[in-house]
Image (tube, rainbow, N blue to C red; front, side, top):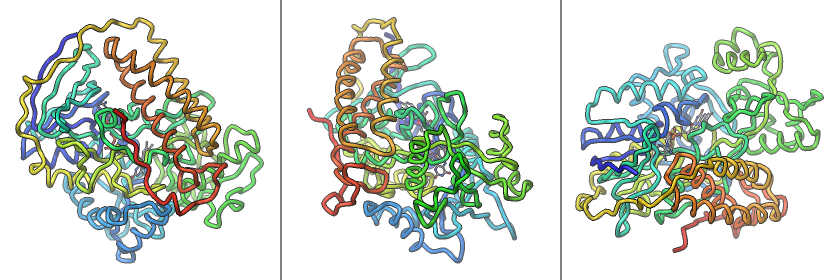
Length: 525
Ligand SMILES: Cc1cc2nc3c(=O)[nH]c(=O)nc-3n(C[C@H](O)[C@H](O)[C@H](O)COP(=O)(O)OP(=O)(O)OC[C@H]3O[C@@H](n4cnc5c(N)ncnc54)[C@H](O)[C@@H]3O)c2cc1C
């Protein structure tokens, strides 16, 4: 196994919004190296359709956005964090526009604002229905102007370099050559995004395997509220299984689409008075229960009663993608199913992205700041990523580590052997995803969670052995991350003997005051 040493001031793991925004804000303070798993644009950010929530309309207020966020968060939002995010967001949206992000304008060249489920006002800034792609493309091109920002694509970070409770960089695998690199840094940032791939059905791209959670947990950080995994109620159903399912944005319901079962019945009226505009967890649970009750593969989302030209104008991306599957959304309903979408919990951080370990920051979907509580309000995640990566950049100089010598670092063990049977990793990965979907999904039961837990403990032991003894490969790194995340979600769900926000357990259907607290997990020594 070859190893190469590299030094940088800032090591950023990931290339989504959190990473790119942070890089642009610290590159005048030192050298920046971004490691990213696949191509630069392979990130959840790139797939965001709806947009970013921000108070930009005179009829809106910080108090209203805060209230909507906390109401959706079901009593577990950290109010101070929410207020920071809501107040600091609007100025940062203008910064994005300053870098060239082209948000859609309406009358009088003002920003056009969408309304989404759970929001009491129109406040979603968007760029057509491909907001994430516009942000990702623009920030990547902005980065090209700075020679002290380097990006290594196809590099997967798999272990943090730690000593005396501080982090000094990371080990990464260059997937194209098989070489291991050791990156030493004054600041290491986890901007690794979510973990939707831990479930069989997900809207997340293949890179979202929760590596940042596993890196931080194995290094000794606290991980919080992992039981709150958000399922998007409406992803496109297709007869063939897709690694990543195409999302039919919340905004489609915001613009008047209705949900019906396979007999054409508008079932949301039996679940919530807000009907299709109820928060995601309620809509996802409603879809899940209709699917189970009726034994159908999908329900229908219908916007075809709206003007055809209007639909094509506001949802060009969704229109085109559905057409690829022979569905004309201006004429017929869209078959949809729920899918794992967003990880509300994450690595514990303060309001500046600082984790429990000095020198290690975490921002964006990988981090827990407290803004989402037990359920995320739509379009608050890009906002969280933007606000907290900016705050991290503002204080980073004071928190960096200057006194570490890479000479004292021991290289990884060279006595590993190649495991020829990659079927081992592929098989276990499938089992984890299926078990998570069936036993730790939208509706939970204690006995199913316990069944899942027994399996995950076994997998973790086996995978750890595989990881220690075989050549490092992408499959093994991701498998270790998925098993760790599956274990953490299941353990957190078992700890919470109530139903709150996204954690719905049929054996404990009530919300209980004694559980109005966060779930903290830390690796036992
Ligand atoms: C289909 C879809 C639609 C969405 N729509 C919206 C929306 O409208 N509004 C909203 O607010 N939010 C939306 N979200 C959520 C939002 O996109 C994400 O929460 C946000 O983009 C996360 O940004 P991030 O920078 O934290 O992570 P990401 O953008 O996910 O970036 C993570 C990066 O880390 C890299 N990475 C991961 N592990 C490693 C490793 N071990 N080594 C190296 N690199 C690694 C990945 O390759 C990737 O580049 C949506 C998400 C999806 C999937």
